[in-house]
Image 1 (tube, helix red, strand yellow):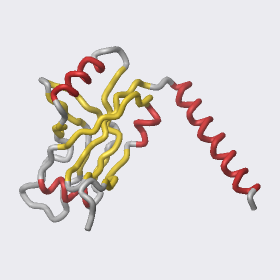
Image 2: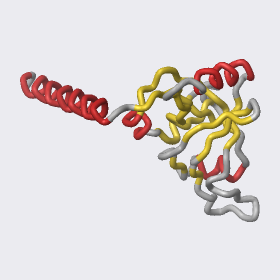
Image 3: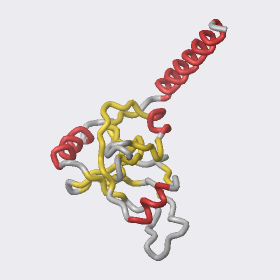
Image 4: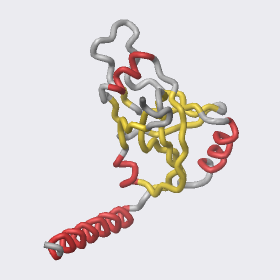
Length: 155
């Protein structure tokens, strides 16, 4: 029998880690409708160019595209509608204070199933400059070369 808190990754926002420094990661529940969950199980989601916004003490994910369910009917929702994120009021107030500072933003990092619930990893991020992006690309390439030479030396 499957465990209660087993996680299954649905989608990952790789562009967010390229464009931002991730300071902290928070877990939030996502308020969805039935056909949206079925579409997620089929893999119809895109987190690219999405962000989170706090409005009136509630947090929303904007720009998250959940494709309409293929076998759906009139209950299909707008793919780009704002999705409400479920977090404790205390956490939302803390994030409101942090986001109000210069350069910080809330970005969805990944979407996953935790048990039967849909959860979103939301990152408190600071934007990277162009030279920071080049530096991270250079580090990644250097690590790839080192790994390749280590693998060849073991042969």
